[in-house]
Length: 244
Image 1 (cartoon, rainbow, N blue to C red):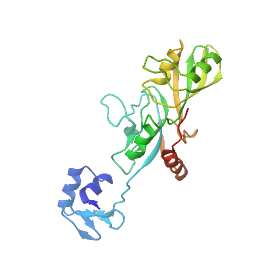
Image 2: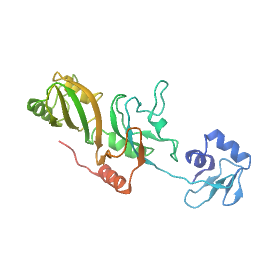
Image 3: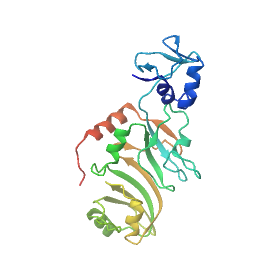
Image 4: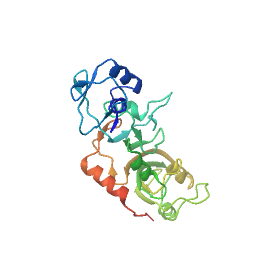
C-alpha cells in the first residue's frame, strides 16, 4: 500500500505537488469514487486509479537498454549538455537513472532503470562485472600489450588494474581492439592505453555483464529490456562468480 499522491507521481502523472492539486480538485477516483485526500493509501495491484476518467498504470520498476551517443552526459541533470534522460521521453517512471557512467565522448551501452538494488549489485567493486569495449587506438597495439593487460596495468593508483582481456582486431598506426575489464575506474580504458604510450581516439561500450548492445539500435535510441535479458541480468546479479 502506498500514498495516492506517491502512486500518481511515480506513475508519471506529475510532480508530487501537481498531483496533490489534482486530487484536492476532485479529478482523481479510486475504484470509481472521487478521492480528495492525497495521503489515502492504495494498492497498485488491486485498486483502479483514474485521473479525469483515464486509468493510470503503475509500474514499480522499468529497465531500458540505451545506446548512449557522444556528447550525452551519463546523468539525470546537467546544465550544459543533453543527458540520458533527455533521450528517454516516453517512460512510465520519473525516477530512472543510468547504471554507471560513460565519458561524454564515449558511446555505447547504458542500462537505465529505477531498480536501485540491482544497480548497486552491478556497480559493486566486489562483483567484478565484465564490461567490453570496442576502441580505435592511435598507435600499434601489440602482443606485448595483450600480455601486459592480462597481468594488470599501472595507471597511477595504489594497485594495478585487475587482469583484463585485450583482443587485437587490426594492427597499424591506428589499431582496432576489443577490451574486457572487470572493474570501473575513472577513465580506465583511456588510462590503460596511456600507460603503454597510446591514445584512445574512439571508444564504445558493447556489453555489460550479460547485456549486449544490439547492432540495430542506433545511437540515441533505447528500448525496454526483453524478458530474456532481464532474467539473465537478475540471474547474473544473484551469481557469486568472481572474475579473475
